[in-house]
Amino acid sequence: MVSPSYSIHHIAVIGAGAWGTALACLLAEQGLAVRLWAHEPDVVDAIRSTGENTFYLSGISLPASIDVTNELAESVCRMDALVLAIPSHAMRTLLEQLRSFLPNPLPLIIATKGIEEDSLCLMSQVVESVLSSSWDPFVTVLSGPSFALEVSLNKPTTILLAGENTDLVSSLQQVLLTPSFRVYTSHDLVGAQIGGALKNVMAIASGIVDGLALGFNARAALITRGLAEMIRLGAAMGAETSTLYGLSGMGDLVLTCTGSLSRNYTVGLKLGQGRSLAHILEETKTIAEGIRTTRAVVGLANRYHVEMPIVGSVSDVLFHGHNPSQLVHNLMTRTAKRETEGTPL
Image (tube, rainbow, N blue to C red):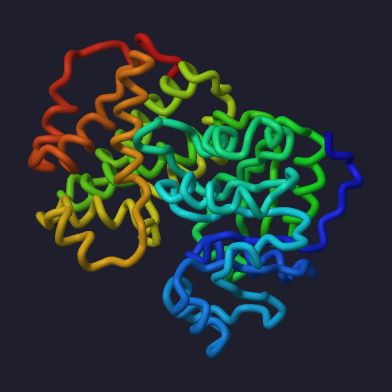
């Protein structure tokens, strides 16, 4: 096991999207030697030439100390810890590429919020399947209400770091803590990941509600019943209900269902306004994790025999050509029942 005094001086952030870039800035400002890996050479060139990630976090000056590269072997060489901030659908392939460069387990922070489509694996399970169970004591998950832009602007943010190795989680908590970035801890890896993934699906639904101009009442109902679905699935998968009432569940759900900076909310908003998913995806270069996650959650709901009508309705709109207004009608005309019937909420 990792000792409480485990020290981290050099850290690699794998993924230079908005979130990975914001985390790299935060860690560099803490005095750590940060190496940021970007998949696209153009992103590396932009950061080196302008001091900004003009592709994904434009307008934010990056600390000059950040070493940016698109060479995977170089990115993890002589590192004390790793942060994974890549899209969930790329996680397995990237870990397979990294595996030969990682002979020994290192403290690992998973900052990706999603579920693998085909296997229905959580990101921690993908790590275990690719890198082996010897990495289990080193795996942590960072989740919670945290728009990258606001974190990079040092606006007050609270977030959850979850992991089964209490000593490691405590050490990483101290690494991440700043006066504007408050980190709480938990041992509930499953709950942290279920909340972080499902809130993106619910954000699409919330955007649809707003795109249809259905009002605040409808959005409040959507968020509340969305939380009920998150708790039902989480309980079936072994998550603690208290985790989903916290930052990585309710906190992130409220943020992404109401904040205009949410990519998933924006996708739903445009769907509600009558745009097609194909056209929406054509005009954006950022990834809305909720689209892929919807497929995965439908699969998990079937596997665990959990009723998730909001998720099912979002899936119908995204992949089966259903009109967004029909989504709301279907949800509102379901069989009447008690609020707490068959669910922890």
